[in-house]
Image (cartoon, rainbow over all chains, first blue to last red; front, side):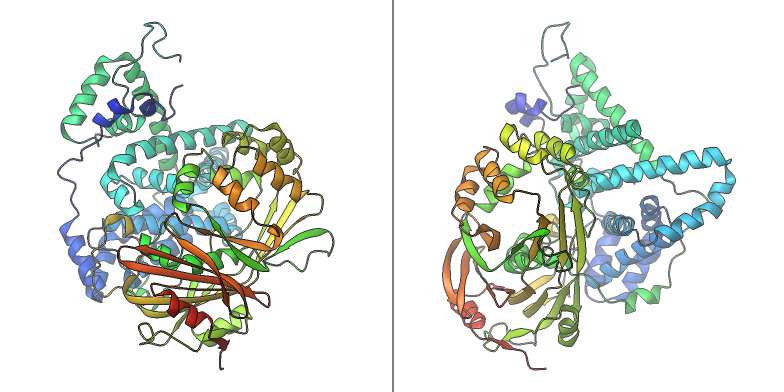
Length: 207
Length: 409
């Protein structure tokens, strides 16, 4: 397929010419930057504002990974606890940062399987399952499990890239919160997507 | 190369996948974007590549969005007050790479060695004789350029997920760290805590704080064929090594973590001012305002492996395979009692040597960076692994290390 990131190596001089220069509108939301300064100074009012402003997006991202409302709430809450205890620097895109912390927490919860029994029991009775017919519902659940399994098997950074991108975060935001050069996001993302696809298709074929 | 087989030529521009990928998301800034987008329209090869990338991207995005959430599932916010009373549960930023700025990682190097070692300890519950055990009885410095090595390994297509599957790994992903009181640290770890009586004045302005790592059990059962595949993916081609790896099929490894205790002195704290650090270190970085010193201790790690495994043969095959960088082969080859020796790697610019400390032989390393000097000392005594580290002169670290005494209750 020639999809591997080897094409750059074939002509490094050429590839360098294409190093991305970022668009000029890559700026941190000034309201968030201000909030981060105040949170770091112990201002709980600023923390509350950030909480109200970002809870929904962060909880939604956590729910996608966790698949369980209680786990998602815990994971999102942990992100805000961490914001309170150890706020990142003011040049951090706050929502993307919270989203990363929360989804990683959700992954940890999935791995530990601490809620699995409760979750499975709830699934049987959930409105989600009742809304569709049994076979379609079962298929959807199986498919979601497959996607989660694939995600969980990826290296942490690849998973974070895919999750943040699916949540719609920009390259500069992703680069900042996962700590890579903005110019490398495209490469890392392409690799992560290929890895996901391979893992997904292998599982699907093997299932 | 299949692409452009008909035309019998390759694209002259040869853009990176990453740039093509960025063009798809309109994330390749300014003129570069326009140039490359135009090129993709004109070049059949690049169009095909971009199309393949777009298809993969769409598949992934589609699968992820399928995870929901559904309209029926809303996550109610918890009461805001609960956030304010919740204590920080983890202190990952202290030692886990990727969660801290580089200086902090290095300052915690000895602590990290001890904490990670804590994930490899004793399993006395397994039948005696059925397992081989590796118990750390001494530490030995090895000279490898850790940075250079990391660079070489980073280039290998070794995937954590695949390795995890091949080992049927069941256990914790990473240690967690709890900030707690000394009494609680003692009761959680079961250690007869020993603390320095000589504390450098520079870090002694506040009493020590205590951090305990989590305990946990990890089990692995080798899936031979899968592990062979992982090795092949990582460019291992030596048949002798591959057959050794295949023969591991069904072998078990059990690891049980004892909690490690880390005492922290100095002005390192939850940030009260926004640190002027760069984006890369933005995640959960504790502010280090002044000199810090860490004293870490954990029961000596033991790793147990099925008796069926010829571990010496495996090690020899690995070292001879050509897959291990020669500097590592040399460094590991120099360790005689390798089953009982914990290698302590030193970075390229480190100076490292053996010293007498705490009635035994340990290693002390010194590294200068950004105008600071980081010193770490590490040794074992009576079945406990100790590490002392800080951005302090060697004399201060050794004085503290040599003054360890049972902590008064």
